[in-house]
Figure 1: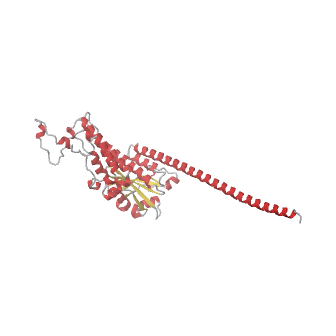
Figure 2: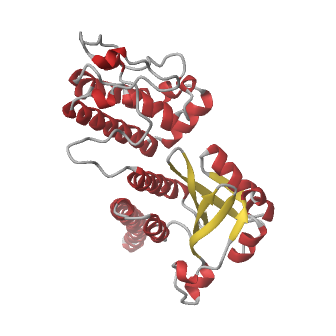
Figure 3: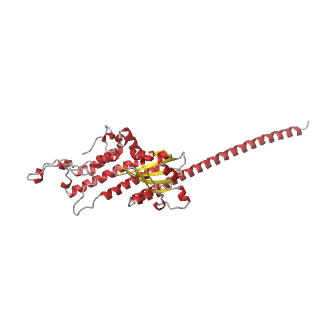
Length: 364
């Protein structure tokens, strides 16, 4: 036998072997390339998502910052309502602001889809006359009584037949009501529907309520007389430290009898410097409590419901108490714990028991 046959056989074996090696190598290269491309794409997507998320957060923070600034710069109620309607454009499709007049609800301004599509102005000039009794709308009544946001179905019994027809609500549509609390009660309601972003609207409604309270308080405050500091806008608080001091000998006022029903109040007996200290303490207390309501609305609601507001807000309350003690209590022996009074008034609806047994009580 010639050696040609073994050589041909060996050549075929080698060719088959190298062919399989090349196929395996191609598969490995293809798998490695696909893996690396997939990893690169996933990393790029993650980076793009992270960048987009960060940019969205920055944009939202800036938008909220501008909205809060505009609300705080409002000069009157009408301007505040119009501004609130405008800054909430990105967070709901339809909205309205209603003022409360005892048992009657009156629309002040609104934004409707039909009005926007037809090019109508969103201000009060194009506002249809809308007024109805609170008894006709259970959702409005609940929001006013609880002072908390309310989610309701767009049924005539919940929001009134007139409002359902005006906004062309569907039968299964949800609506949101956010109370604007001012001067110890609900002065207005912000009404929203359609793709509602409730947490953001609640925040802006809280800010609007605080500004409305400030505007109302400003209107109530009398013009100061020359060289005389007016007392706080609220009823005068008894200054226990000064009221309990013994009268000086020969003081003719010590022989005067107090009339029944008149509080023992030493406000007008304070020096101008002490009066300024008391007014500064009041302002400090209002700001501290307003920040609690603005930054921790869920804790306020849960603490009020569980009758343990102090435990729900203990870090904020303790920090505010310590600041008030350092900045105001130690500044004058006549100082009153205005922080305690504001906490009870604004957070507990004048019911101190809502703070629970762990609340340490007034500082002075």
